[in-house]
Length: 261
Image (tube, rainbow, N blue to C red; front, side, top):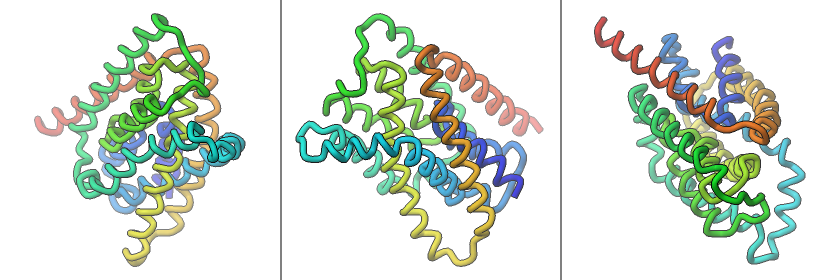
């Protein structure tokens, strides 16, 4: 139960802060040799459903406004819909591959690679005019959606890669984050429903551990959304990139020490 609470806190923070929640949910049990329920993809996705609740509550007014654009061909709801398709397709087609490829070595590589992208996007941030959320067109939405599909690889970070893609299209940081979070909502919902179906046929599960993890990740996730958007109004992604480099180094060092031992 304590492990579930800790991982719920980690998920709530790292789902929205661009440091990769999947990396942390894999690496923490690996570091501390946690076994059983908390070290499964099913539990990871259950924690994601907690952050889904946080998204739905925080952006409830935004979703109501978006639904009002459904009758417009260029409505933002349609841009989000089509931007969701690449990740949805990849999630269905690559579900087994994702389940089997959760190695710390892969995570160290993807943490470092996306950190480079984050730093490069920030280097160009001030060199071009920045647009707001309402200026997102279908082409840019699809570009961000394709980027989101790569977040299925552990260590990439959904928020990290989609915010970087948003910055690349010329969005302000806070607007890139807002679109990123709205875009994550249907994908997380779909993954949660798919895994819930698999769990129903899996027999006995430790329901208390699942409920605890979901509740904690929802509460912490809500706070993380609020303060990250405020943070990005004033500060860059560089601090998150540096943290990712440090975490990748620690993982590599741990792998090396394990091999040497």
